[in-house]
Length: 109
Image 1 (cartoon, rainbow, N blue to C red):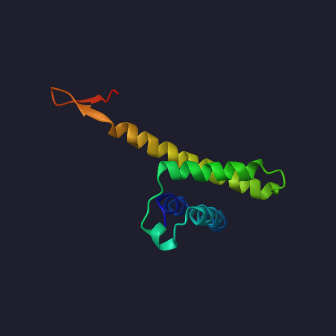
Image 2: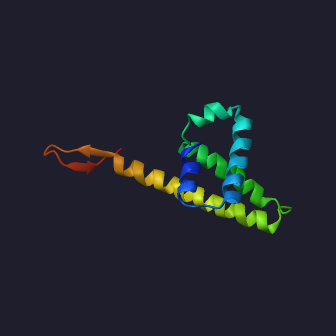
Image 3: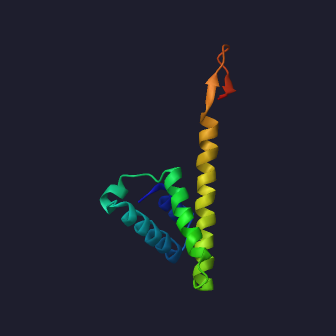
């Protein structure tokens, strides 16, 4: 189970919501040729999350998607986007450099 899936469980998301995420994740992994065993040992990267979001967006753009499914997919996408934002915030906080006095300064590229 990836980190985002674990987080969904911690947030108390209903089983249907989690099942839809699992289904989309399985589709994504199958397209990449990743087995369930490989996935169990893998944390979802930011790039992978963006790929999943891209797949969700393509499904939402399909006008034949029933409204209820579109709403669930939209909710999942916003949850995944929030998780991506959390990861980005964490990385930004980690990109710090120690100054001459031993304090921390923002790392400049």
